[in-house]
Length: 74
Image 1 (cartoon, rainbow, N blue to C red):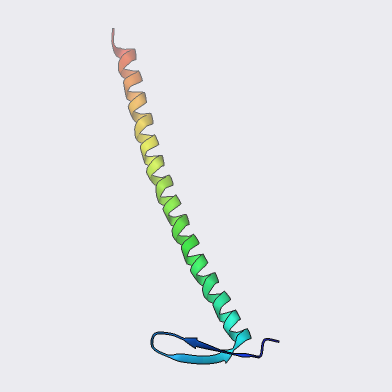
Image 2 (image 1 turned 60 degrees about the vertical axis):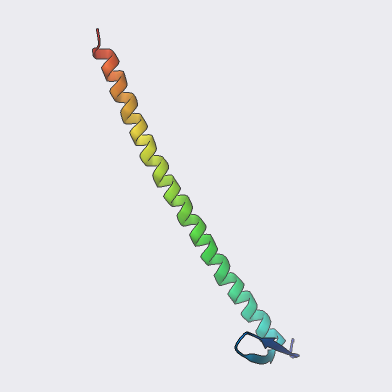
């Protein structure tokens, strides 16, 4: 349907491709970049969740030890 030619000029080359192929290629590149960014974002969230879980475990252990110390004190 989009049979017209489009010239694409990159820093190192110049291409002449059909408009339909160019649109599909641009969509595919956008999809791959979007998925890569999403995976990076999710990995950051998982790392933060791990840090928060470790901090919570430490805080709970500290609270338990201080509660035990208060109970054993006369």
